[in-house]
Amino acid sequence: MKSLTQLNPQRLFPAEPTVRAVTEELYDSVKDLPIVSPHGHVDLQLLVKNEPFKNPADLFIYFDHYVTRLLHTQGYDLSELGKGDTDEAAARKAWSILCSNWHMLAGTNSGYWLAHEFGTLFNIDETPNSENAAELYDIVQEHLDQPAFLPRALFDRFNIAFLATTDDPCDDLAGHRDLANDPTFSGRVAPTFRPDAYLDPRKPGWAQKAGNLIAAAGLNGQSFVNFIEAFRIRREFFQINGAVSVDVGVTEPYTVELTEAKATELFEQALAGKISETDAREFAGFMLFEQIRMSAEDGLVLTLHAGVIRNHSTTTFEKFGPDTGQDIPVAVEFVENLRPALERFGLNKNLHLILFSIDETTWSREVAPLAGFYPSVFIGAPWWFLDAPDSLLRFRVATTEIAGFYRGSGFIDDTRAFLSIPARHDMARRVDCSFLARLVVEGRITMAQAETIAVDLVVTIPRKAFKL
Image (tube, rainbow, N blue to C red; front, side, top):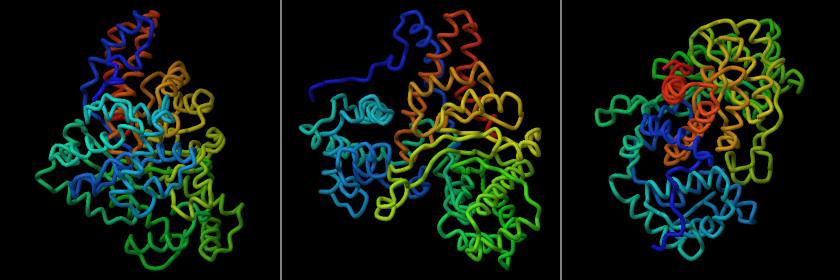
């Protein structure tokens, strides 16, 4: 193959020679450290079944809405990108679309991760295009057919010390128990309690889900008391099965404290489908308040991801479902929305509340100041649209002077794309070392401090935030 581009070993390092040299020294000290991935969406069955990946398109396109949304902007229907029934011909067509439109990914986090994966895992150093698409497909497929590319082999190769999945509150977690009890697998994989669909009566099918949750907890009768007790029982079940955190995604992080009588009234109205929009917001705010209260009691870390309008295109959602690239960020407010919960539980050291925002204006104005006072509040790493090199640098600039390095979550890959995990964590390590190097050269911290912080950002800080 004719080499057109290669991975630069100093990629993402500063251009200024002195800072670059310090960056390289710091990066060398952390590049081989284990990966701690306490929040993500990798399918557990990938590791339980340990079967070969189907094909390059299935691996890199079908389930990666970072990629499909950009290709969709070029007029390709999602059905051409693997959303629907597929076969070998369809997979090759989708792959050809990706390679032919590779320029669309230039400068994006997706393009960076894919280039890293192609180069480090498949020894591809050629820029994808329409002419070499078929050849690249065959190269990747040849690797995927090898035992070294089975999911568990890659888990070990990636040096993953901890991986969390995302799981429905009613899940029996049998797969997690199977994996934990499998003597041939030595990794640590934990479930995460994801109650979004059960907290907000505005969500489709909420009443049915509320009944399912109560039943899964072994309780009889759809009462508000049983509803709350079901959350406690199921959270405890998740903890017994290794969970360390609860993940809640909301458009607005609104919390409110209600009396039991008022909450019961709203629950019954919601169950009957007769709740107003205003009261539905109140009930959802109370349920978020309750999840925070429960975390203060049972110690499960609560990660709060705020500021996304889900399924913006109704037509696309109805045809292809969620997670198809049509979720759009919106402005978000934390200070007043979270004040009722923080007034009650913010000083409780058993609570770890990690705030994630796609609205980066909140980093210095709200999230860092909150984490700079409340012992319970931690700063969530850049997420989704913002987990990219320049965004990570802006994040460090926006939050460090206010709250320092040690009030953060550590890097969060938040991904379904299993093979991208090392690329994402390596990116974060390079960016953090770059930021630390500048502080060293500017005389703001010593090299010894930078060396310690660089390691802590990878290992100590995420372990503390997620109580590992």
